[in-house]
Image 1: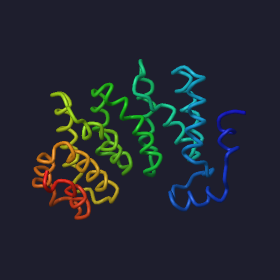
Image 2 (image 1 turned 180 degrees about the vertical axis):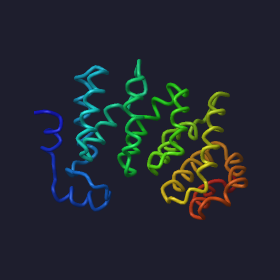
Image 3 (image 1 turned 90 degrees about the vertical axis):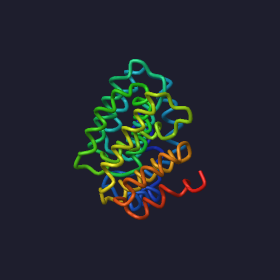
Length: 224
């Protein structure tokens, strides 16, 4: 049984119908749960070297089945992989295909590992800020969340953090709800580590954000 057949063997038609209604992206859904996908991915990862995982991830993504794309991203989610240029190239190439938060977020969790491993890749991610695909623009913020979450950032990390805050400022006038939510998410996570910096950002750029995003970003700032 190949990997796609293994996913199909776990299909739940009723749940698949519910997932299509929820996610709305027009593709095949099998109704397979994340824990079930995790179990399969662990088995597939254990039996392959890095090149084998990359090849399987590309095949799963190309199927355009929801659970297969989730599995493709999970297959590449690992902190220590060297060399990893081919992995990053594959993940970055998926950005133009993003059409919803679920698959995009799983892909960018994998992408986060590769960006932290080589921050020079942020140059490529910055180009996504002008992408016509909303989900690609949003991915620039989701992929860089590790810099909002660092408790003891080094000088280079602080420089990357400021760079992404500049991106958030560029996107502040983007009226798309998911972009605004991503800005608020980034700022809220940063406020747990550096509330004064978030207050300064909101003072400078908050008026250009949607009200709900501004409130969400400031939710943890009070008293810090």
